[in-house]
Image (tube, rainbow, N blue to C red):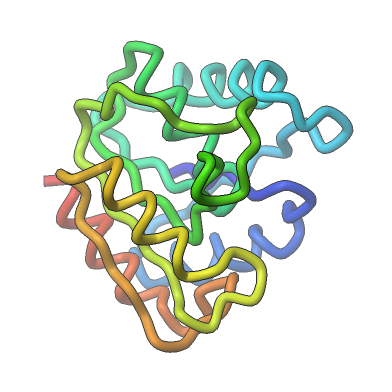
Length: 167
């Protein structure tokens, strides 16, 4: 399994991946994405390369900024990915953080999507979950009361969705 980390979050997100991996019973690989170039082009090329290495039907996880870019890559690039779990994903449209370079404008990816977000996230406000859900009406939405930006204590809940998406 693959987890795509957030901007500047490689070390923290490796810990998140390890906890999810334990709960899911599989190792989760976290490749280092370009931390010195946060452009959509740099990240989308790196993510597309990582997706190409996955076995068909694999579930991929994206956290925060990595989830945002993953969503756009899945919408724009053919892939054999079986599904995606998007964790604490920012909304970059005008109603959210309003950064056109990162904003998702569709089409909705054809793979199953699950979004997890915590009300006590102090990095990406919970309102972003509703904004993203409006753009992704077929996605399963999981709102948690606690867990913060790193979704602490939610490894088992995320693992259940990974298993469900993988079927």
